Image (cartoon, rainbow, N blue to C red; front, side, top):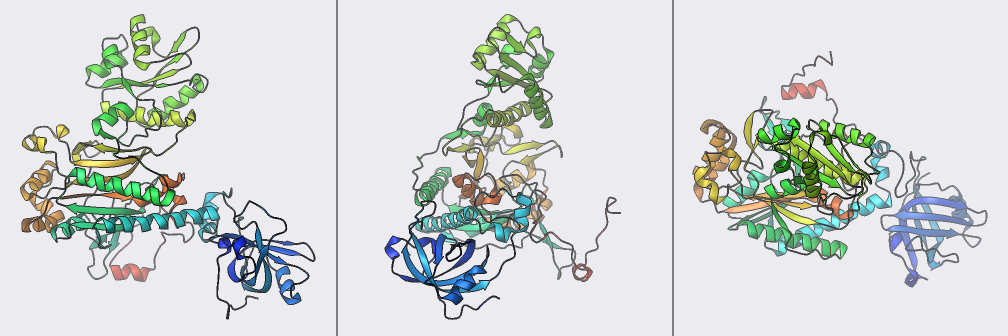
Length: 596
């Protein structure tokens, strides 16, 4: 039977007590990690968010209290009064291993059934089960440590930006739906039937309006929502450290971002992050790493073989070059044993699954070269390939050819990461970098149209202003991404504030004046009333914490995450709603053919 805690007031947390507290009478609360009944001696490990303390009951303990302790089981909630004393059998496995509490009063404040898994660090129970009982999963010390660390990062964030003159401003959660690259989560309006709010993918428009309003330095730890497929580093709802600054250029924004990273690593991990971060253009990282968010903790950079094979007898190579594409490769060092022909077949299926037509290869053996295409090449061509690849004994060269250069680069970029994983290449440290000078437009093959790579409010670079309409593929943006170890932490840009230039960019994106005004008229109207030059960025708080802790997924640093299909196993969200609620909203559900 659970008891009341009347009269009990906590004096200390379990994990904070030390030898210096010996002789001190304390009151602690917590959950039972385990109980050991040795007959005339009972030990209970009591746990709270700070750690574990051992409770001791023996022949000197009041019999009523002792008998109560006999009934205690794992995950019972206890309130305990006792005196701190030195332990006879010390341990270095816990921070309080030199002491224990001699129990004088014990109250069972909450009983517990046997939990579906043991509440221990690095629990091996399947994640789906643990997420179903997330409130129990969060009792584990490793997850609690992650959440507390996240809190510290958020506190340092507010302190840093406050000291830099930023004002924290909350922006609406129910907003107008505007195209931002991903699907919106929509919220139907009961009052305005047939109309919908959207949950913000970012506070982009509102923070720009804050600049027009005269708040020259805005900051917000903002909740954002995107209805897109989940990955290890993506959730449908996420938290962004959002900033915007007036009267700045790109250099100012990048310096603020670097200063923040230095501060947060120093205060939470006592680690010095060197600045300035290396900078690469978008074209440079794509050419070298096949990715606009490269992991530079290891090499295996791409190389171009187009000049070598443009006249070769192998039409796959020569044809790709003739059609305006390229032939490129990467060298996996000392990979001969790992990359057997059977494994190469799997890698070929891997690259085909992401858009490539195939995968050519060369294995550098002791006695001879093994190659998927050697019979079509001259000796000079093969030697030139080996030289370009800087290949040596036991190396394996992988080559991709395509008339679409973007397919070649992205395929090799993905293959580079896949090989690093299979070869167990050591990746250590925190490699920050900036990617700058992004293309303004990218071609969307599905819609067969040019779309904004970042968003339509990004300013094109000054040298493109006179030639915007000539070639969309050669228009670059004042956009920048902060990348850490292959993860995009931040994306930002200098914004357009000139109404005429904004009109030109909308036109190039295929928006008529009427469409643009319907979608963004409130912003373009605001720019008519003295808009200051401004720019900013959003830093993913979840991703930053995930990377700092080197956690494998965002689910390890988010209290109540969603799973792969965007559902929450604990509450079974999303769920159906009552017909009366649908009627209030004026919504009729139509069953799909599959449902029927």
